[in-house]
Image (cartoon, rainbow, N blue to C red; front, side, top):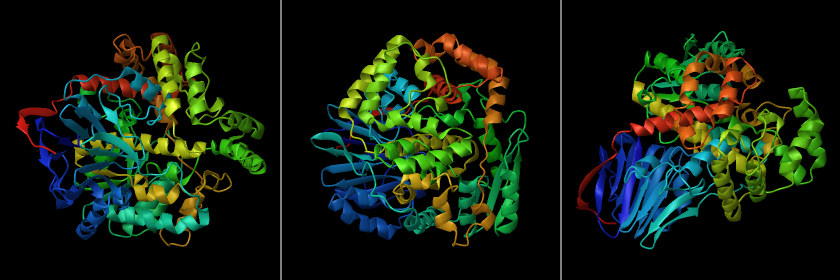
Length: 608
């Protein structure tokens, strides 16, 4: 697993990370399993900056960044293209800055002599064997929004830096400081188009640095990245195709590859084994991730794609359209914001259009939106806490429940009464501390991105460990997020146009064939999810049954989970998302039991 870590203290430390490499210019900072070309720095000692990851800044720009470090203008160090961690030192002040999408998370723990920081919570927990925090894991399972409990990590004694914050360490101690606004100043869709095109072009260009390039070629988002990369050189474009999928991804991919120079298309044919939940018989055989990871469920599908890529080149970079939906469009929950802002006519017009697409009622959509329009984030958390103290709810599909700032998922109803009560108390405390945007969509956009970023890290571990391929998700870059999210959600998610922001960005750019931009369809994997639930029901029953680590902690109870697995195995409507979360968490807990050592004990060395 790749990670970074460092020490800041008045006295020396007695641990070193196994296999760690010192970060040039920074005392007591190390990277583990990062290639040397992705660890760069400028300055040294008390004025230094280092970036770890895919950073588009050249050496001169890094050197110029020292002026921002000296002035402690930390946000300026997050504006380069790419996805990376920044570590900066100005005198006796150390700033550790992750990205906006959680691909480079930051954690810390304080000891008497100083502070350890790291991009791996599990590594910091391994310093003294700190256990998993059951309440934090309950929040992960029941709420699926990383920032709900703020600085709580999944491990006791380990703190996390919330989204949009940085870690600032001084002789007085460690604290988090917000560097990103909770909401952006609105930018009109038409005005944002050129900025989105420039950000995506630069993000893709940062990865096209001489390595072999491959890319998914499926939906509109991945096709955009593949076509941008093809402007710079050859691209091995891959499309996963399975007869059980009802979609036109393959037809569009073949047509696109025939139209766009430099795209060499390869079809990845599905098989009986390329379904959800395949390969979970032995969790210890899967690459270790720092947190429960959604891609565990789709490992067999991802592996089939990566094997095809590896057959054409090795040690390359693979572009994925992950998070394109999150930044280019918006879910219909923005209707709650329109109602809150008393834009009733616009809310009604949009509800009618959404209802036509879903063969639903506009009135039912607005009824679902009203509760979220009448409260704020803190109020929503108090309501959720009240709900958790009541008996568990009968299951109904999430799409039929009222819209919410932080929806309670079906997994909340599978927990023991004690865990539900603990989570309720934590939500009450969080509500007292909440600093939230005025709009529901501003909150949920950031949470969706943080969740997607963490999950993409899991896919990256699989690709690196098994094939030496680097996964790149340009839609998760800071620069792309900042170009897209200022566009109001009711413009990004307008139901009368499919991904209008992408259309504004590329309609006149001669990058995408016109038939791609006019596409209004999107593939889905539901058939493979249900096939996997049926095919691997015995394995899932074993994972979540009597020997389950989640059950031992009270995070699930046997009867409702068994009922849901039975529904899934018989093809009935199922809480797929909840099962997904539970399986990923169970696999992760079992992996932790056999995780390799992270630290070696040494003599006291180094000071801040």
